[in-house]
Image (cartoon, rainbow, N blue to C red):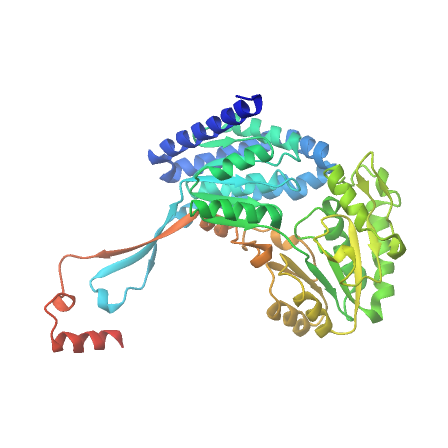
Length: 468
């Protein structure tokens, strides 16, 4: 047998053994207990706090993020999610009693949140701490065991998370499998009770295909070209500041970053001036040497992004450094839907400007593309904002801001169609990893004979009466 085959066999054996252990542990019923789940959340919270410096350092090595950005956009959000879950866990776990039709008298009806069992969490490289540990906290709160597969594109974070988990939980409860495509393939060929995936649409299709072979339910958190509409009455300075923040956060490698700008032609020049001013203010006039400005994750993605920059359309930025994998915050103007930058999700620090003449034109452009994960509209007109919010299909978004709608446990986060399926965060995260059992508790003191044979005309009349 070839060395590669031995290696594959060893990995398959490792995965199989971990799944077997987790299934056996889950069958013992310990994860069903409130105290067990609460203790697990507390343990995870303490571990993240303890290793926050190590995690931030790993993120810096993989993505070039500053300590402040890692604290704000990764570690603090993971801790906030766990705090919310701890506070509300007992309430989430309680049965929900619902109305019982008179035809079922005497009985009580309720729904019970039940864990799926052994779940697989596949996380991405762009927010490797948050998008690994947040769904893990949801899975734990719902009473599951979990196998985590971090992204191989963020090897330092992957290693740090593996060490954190191994110091906190036994592998029969939570385990980390590192590696690349081979390990992904092995995990997707195995049978799990639930799969939670965050990543690209292309890989999401593969995940769904593999899950279908076992009829495994999935949550897919994908992405897409999220539009940002700036109407004539927008507060331009504030709008530019918030758009620049959301667009170039993590060097544009954010699934809900505003992908392209639809700007009313009457204010385009003034808006662009405000954007350039904000880029200089937030990232300095030399962003390629700015320690706090992140880098592109890999040479492959760096080359892809550079190919999207049409030099003749660049009105600001456009420079790059292949040694550091950094690309300047870039603005390109006179963009049309046929340009390369509009053919795919950008996922980088390139801001295309598309001129519009009306709200209807903006809506037509958005409708011509796949359902986005997010939508942002900047206007002082509530009616105009609601027109976009109510008449277009997208995952979620903001009025007069960008990105921050995902930074709360009080609202669900997720897409639909091409941008994903299912949602999480807070109660929605608990629900994502839970199956709702419907239970009708029938009492014994009365047993109406209407449903039993022999059927008579009188029974039929009574049935018709009950069904009205």
